[in-house]
Length: 191
Image (cartoon, rainbow, N blue to C red):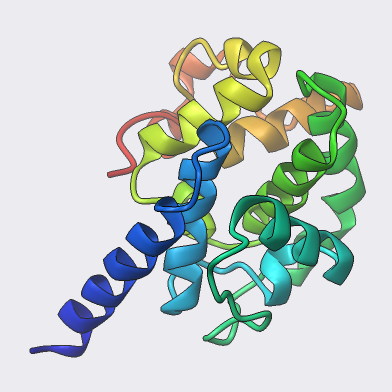
């Protein structure tokens, strides 16, 4: 069996172990996918999934009490530290649009922000298995923000565009996305 197939099989086994704990809410499903991917070195999430150690411990206790989850990433994270400047702004943006103010929301925000520091599509950087999972996660946790992405812009680009608009910055020279020569880089399939 090739290393890639073995890693996929390990990811699926870990996913089923994580998911077999009591399903709390939809975030449990997405976290199970992200953690399973993270455990086999997929995605870019750093140690503790990008959470503070206390948050990571609470997430394990609250969502996955029967499962062993390592604290350290199994691969070297490919984060773009140039994007760290926007980290606090991304947290503020997501908090502003979160449907609840809970520890769970803070975990999701921290993990999504850590994923934004990767260089691939956000769903891949998070270790989710499809773009539709990311869309569902964002709709569930940040419904009013997700609703603003009514033209199906790629999520990472959409979040950074929201940051620019919040600051009154419009870096695109095209009068609208529809006439931009880079349209396919911002919109379209990520699968």
